[in-house]
Image 1 (cartoon, helix red, strand yellow):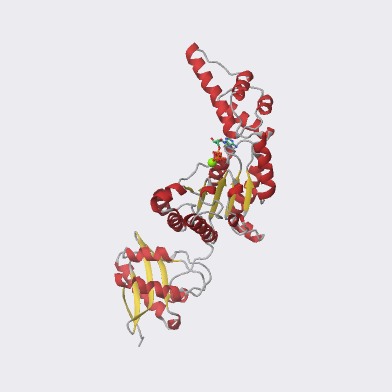
Image 2 (spheres, rainbow, N blue to C red):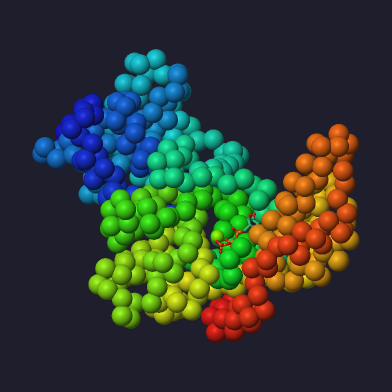
Length: 422
Ligand SMILES: Nc1ncnc2c1ncn2[C@@H]1O[C@H](COP(=O)(O)OP(=O)(O)OP(=O)(O)O)[C@@H](O)[C@H]1O
Ligand SMILES: [Mg+2]
């Protein structure tokens, strides 16, 4: 006589089923249905049966019903009970439940060498060959979306990247070193390329650091989550806030985390008070934990790379330290072209690019907006559409203070020499 009894699953069995499941596997291949799927089916009381021997659970079979079809999500048993017909007994009891409930067809998909495959054959399940199993993972699952909204993440638009004008050198670097490996992790692994986990962008204000961070998330189709240290500090105290937020982030499958003005949390520790030291340590620890998982990228940005705590920039934390400088003449021309195109204007782009030395993308945006506004007002006042001339743009350039003075440009070049890690 068999040394077990098979009975229906009841709510108190959940933990025991999970324990048996954990010991049961005989295949390295990952199963079609994840453990979370099986647990969800158990919680919604889809048909499942368990085997008990000496008051201990030794096996279980779990199903999910969809109309008149059912999927077997798990057949599992403790290793010492293999090869004694337990799998067949579980299946037979589960089938009876399913067919009694009106199910007409039962499906199971298993790695060929997994526990349960023999039992399925013994129970007369036919195998189908010639089918190919396709799968594709959405980068964001519906459950993740509610978590995302709860913690303030957003899904950036796909087209952002193509709207980043000029900045070809920076774009190319970011595309090659960050976006491509993260978008093609298998190919990267084949070549021994380690995936980037964290990157520091530095440069003068308005050069496009935040823009790049958004655009990268858009390219990857990953949610974008900006951490605001000041808000975390107000809510929980900065160190606790950071550690909590990073715990939440660990539950997301994919995410790009952005911390702007990171020098405010990761400033030089020497001479700082104990709280500041605690914060830098907490952030360093969070980065180490963050780095341990795939599917995520931390982007930090700063205007003052020189004031960052040196531990912060040491190898092993940030894979790259990337200067995002003021645009050169070519990049300024590209920026001007994109702004002109947006307002349907024509002007001598080369002249504008030459006149706007030291301008950041933000400065160029400002000058272009000034002209657009003036033209709009004139069109309104005169009742006919007024077109801007090159002279109008040059005048707007003259009235705009360049963010990057020549002294700043020199300092930035110096910082690039000392800090960039590409
Ligand atoms: N390459 C670009 N093409 C088009 N617009 C850009 C580009 N770079 C930046 N901009 C625009 O310039 C403005 C400033 O850019 P952004 O906020 O990304 O700069 P930043 O480096 O993050 O500045 P800060 O250091 O002040 O945070 C934004 O309005 C952005 O849309
Ligand atoms: Mg910014």
